[in-house]
Length: 195
Ligand code: TZP
Ligand code: MG
Image 1: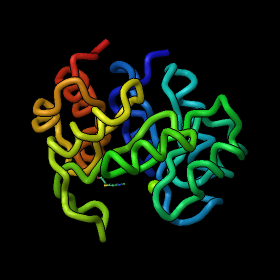
Image 2: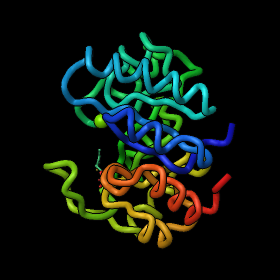
Image 3: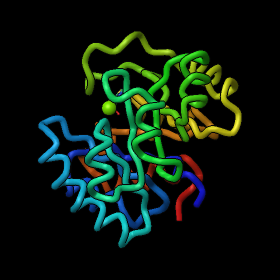
Image 4: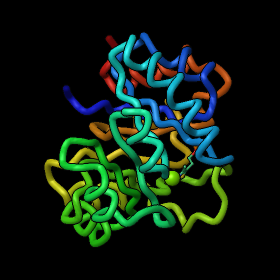
């Protein structure tokens, strides 16, 4: 499977339903209220993703990904280190890591990351406490540092500014939430990967 270039990050099954069926996406289940809630949502999201042929990833929670049989995990700075997550997951699982610059990107790939979430690319109000945006130039520097590794841009990504990131993958939370079906279809058109 070609790694999807649109990642829909959500804690809503309605968003999952709306985002599926328009073209290749990965759903990343991001639940901040605890493993139990994350487990239950992932089980349901995974069933929808399997039926649609979409990847289902879990944000932060390696145990939830293993317990549900999800396709992989995305870890950030406060989660299991990349090498530890890879050890627990085994070689086949998809493992994403958050990076911001070429050095952290190279380290994550050496430690076993199979894709990178890179940002914040633009300003966002969805997540607090982020460092300053790196912009398209910072994103390009990371992409150049890890040839062959899929890179997914994150933070403040909209269908409009995704057009300024040609060839990259993107992840979105707020830009998808209000109209998951319409915005997913629009993102896929902009990315040139609509079904
Ligand atoms: N990690 C870095 S930025 C971010 C996360 C989870 C939030 C991105 O949300 P949005 O609404 O797409 O800017
Ligand atoms: Mg996370």
